[in-house]
Image 1 (cartoon, rainbow, N blue to C red):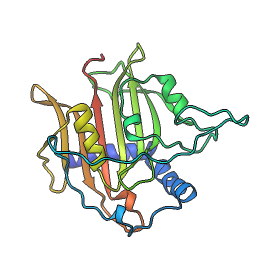
Image 2 (cartoon, one colour):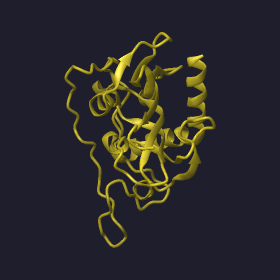
Image 3 (cartoon, helix red, strand yellow):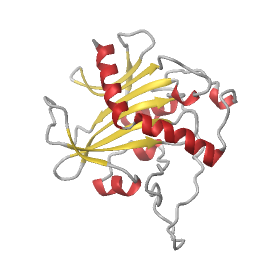
Image 4 (cartoon, rainbow, N blue to C red):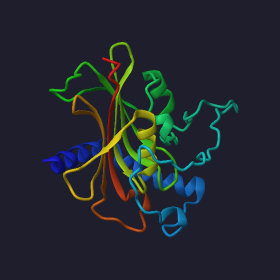
Length: 235
């Protein structure tokens, strides 16, 4: 049952942003960085679950050139003057609550807005804004479909993501450290599951599953990732 649910959500997410982000990931890597080969040291690390009590490695900032207007005036972080070119939005910047619809519109050149919550959801009054996320060019970055859900007061109440990564450890470290996710046993072999629970029921989830086919030529697509984070303080 859980496997079917995950695949259904993954397919829906893929239909609205994952292929677009993945295709742009390769283009950006080639044009900006030249792109590491599939056999470079950064692409050969093993996948190890992150411990909530263990120390996490430090990560260097993703190099980015500042975007400017035609007059040479610098733009804000993530704002891109080329309408169809995706910006690089780092993980800590993407998974945060202190944002607004205006922030989303200023950081991405293409946004799908006014998306309702699924029927039967406990928070049907929320409206979503969906973007294609590329968090960087490293093997532990993400590419996929990111959705922010806002309430009537324009407070972000829920964040979801469906996409791929070559190494999920940095995402897991972020969710463990920032939101206190904890690892729980998964019903399917090979699946890693983290949750935030309230009264024994999950309110936020992270599911990591190996890709059905892993190719050396696509080291950024070794794992399928599904994230759903809810802020209990926002109704």
